[in-house]
Image (cartoon, rainbow, N blue to C red; front, side):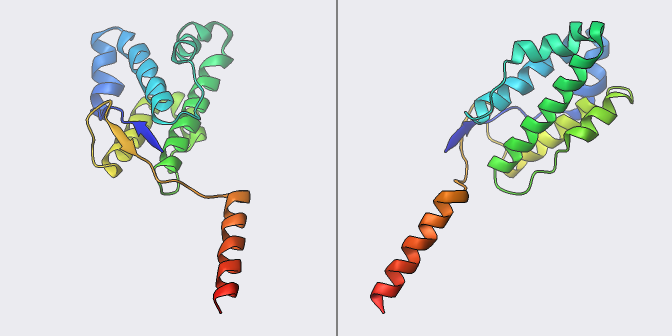
Length: 155
């Protein structure tokens, strides 16, 4: 399985500098980009980046949508980490809690993404990266059964 790599970004620029300079516009662009990167990284991650941006921008009118989008984005990052091999370290609940503290979820999520890209060897943005194929459930049981049968026949 392959996916497309995202961009390693400076966490301080993402969280504080660019949003201040652009009066918050950068945050919406960044949110779109990280959700698009999740979709491009794993074909099983279903997300419409535009809806994610709408949820965190005009969704504030009805209070709940931004937090749902923040939580779901955290889940997507965790799924990306899981696809890359080790246990996921991104916790979407931490992202939601950090949203109440100076929007620190941006710093947290970009840090988690940077760690993911570093684990994959810091590929160029958009480059294809090979992801390990995880064998689980019924497929694993069938493979074990075939291996046991072949071993019993050879003895």
